[in-house]
Image 1 (spheres, helix red, strand yellow):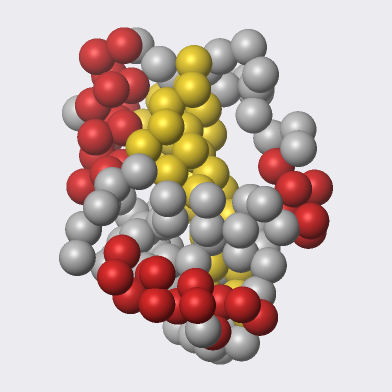
Image 2: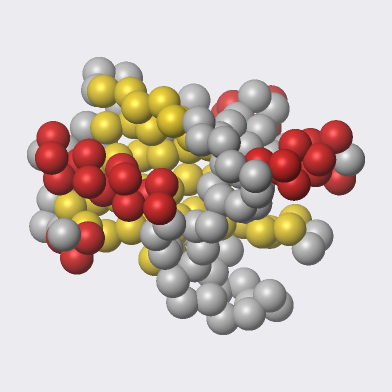
Amino acid sequence: MFENFDILGYFYKQDNHVFRRFLEIKRKNFNNSENDLSVIMMNPGKSNFKYYKGNNSTDSFNKFVEATTDKTIEQILKIMEIKNFNYAKIVNLSDIRVTSSKIFYKMLKTELKNYDHSIFSEKNREYIKNYFNKKVSLLRSITYNT
């Protein structure tokens, strides 16, 4: 089922942290530029580059590149298939890629204070202001794991 979709992530790097600002899932051969599903989640979790060329490479940053799936993205893919959605745009409350909620909450109180990683930060608000199609379904998903 997942081979019917292209999965692209927009990753960026600050210091030693890799962040993901956006994720887009688009049905292959779908050519409309407007998404029909918008998704807001907590943080990118395990989402990663499909073809990562190393920490010092700039080839994969600050542009959309092929991304891997994780269990949450696979659930979105299932919803897209069942509901016949063609194009999902996904943002997270935070751009930091951390798989454990416990670690994520700890980082919020310490090292993440120095970064504009939240959709509520002034800088990121500008990025997402016109990102979503405002006429479509919105899926909100916050999962909790330890």
